[in-house]
Image (cartoon, rainbow, N blue to C red; front, top):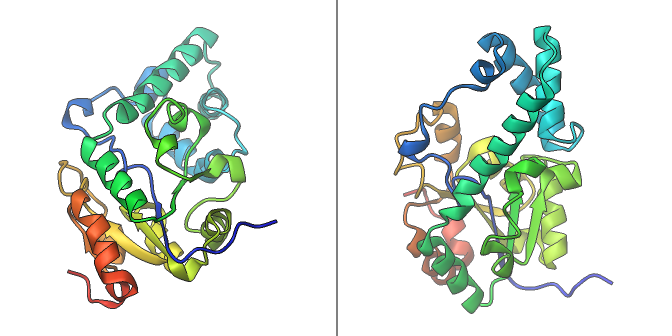
Length: 246
C-alpha cells in the first residue's frame, strides 16, 4: 500500500546544494591521469564517456572504472595503485560530509518543523556517498535516492517521480532545490516539480561555473541564502514558482 498523499515536500540535490566539494584548500591536487601515469586526454575521454554507466551502477565500483581507463590507455595497473586510489577517493568524498555546515542542518530542521517531508536525489557512485550513513543527513532526510542504486540519473523525469512517490507526494506539490548541474532543474520541471536554483555555494567558491548551466538555471527562482529557504517556501508557497527570477 502506498503512503497517503501529503500537501507539500521539498527534494534536494546533494553536491553543491547540501554539501560542497569546492573548497579552495582542496584545489590543485594531481590529476587522475598523473596518478595513473597515463595520457590526460585518454583519461578525460574515458571518464566522460563512462559517466552514465558509472552513475547508473552499470560500472559497479571505482576500481572497475580505473581498470577500464587503464585498459583504454594500454597499461595494466598495479593492484596496489588501484587499491590506494580507491581508498583515497572514498576519503576525499567523505571530506565534504565531514564539513557539513551548521546552516544546512538548521535549514533542514526548520523545514521539518514546518511539517515538510524531505527527499534527496543525487547522481552518484557508491564511493561518493559511502559517508552518508555516518553523516547527520539520514536523521533529517526522509528519502534518499542514489542514482547508482535505482539505475536512473537526473535529468530523467523517472528519478523525480520515483522519489515523489516514495515520499507520498504528487510532483506538482514538490519543490526541487539544486545548484543546476546535470540539467537537474529543467528535469525537475519536466517531471512536474517546482525547481528552485540554490546558489549559496556557487557564489562562495572560485569555481568556473559553465555558462550554459548558469543560463539554463537562471530561468528558475533563485535562493542565495541557505537560511532564507524555509521562509521562502513557507511564505510564498506555489506562488514563488511563478515569480520572475530574482
